[in-house]
Length: 193
View 1 (tube, one colour):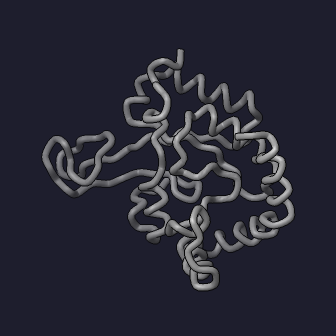
View 2 (cartoon, helix red, strand yellow):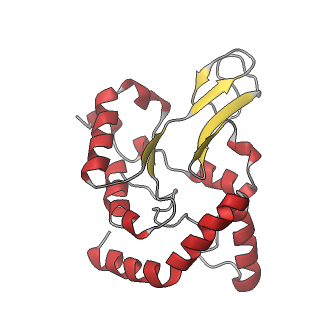
């Protein structure tokens, strides 16, 4: 991202969004359904605006939109310039595919890179689904690849917290989880060494 764009975002964030961050933090303590509700209210007032309200959720504070195709390192580069502006939660996370669990060196490299860029709260999201019928664990879509069961528990980080099944959240949060880019698709995970 261009430096002039980052500088403009910083100015806009401090003037326009910082008060919203404070409100969002307080409101999130009361109700985790805020994301979907806020978009509904925003659309009633302003309609559907491309890249602003054309999804069922807002991108959270300092984050690169979850659907943006980029390497995990580029995501860290961008978000590291903004995390110090938020006085509420400012987690930076990357989404990886299940096979990343087997590449400890690459995971360490990501953590080191985040620390070198002063990321105060960093997480690596790895899909961890379990078939409740046969016990298979891995990245499962709708049906278990082993037994075909639809009785799947999907562990995911939602609103900064690990949830045993994100499908219990509102539609905005469910859509946001579905839209997340797995960074393996945008950066060759096996060549990080």
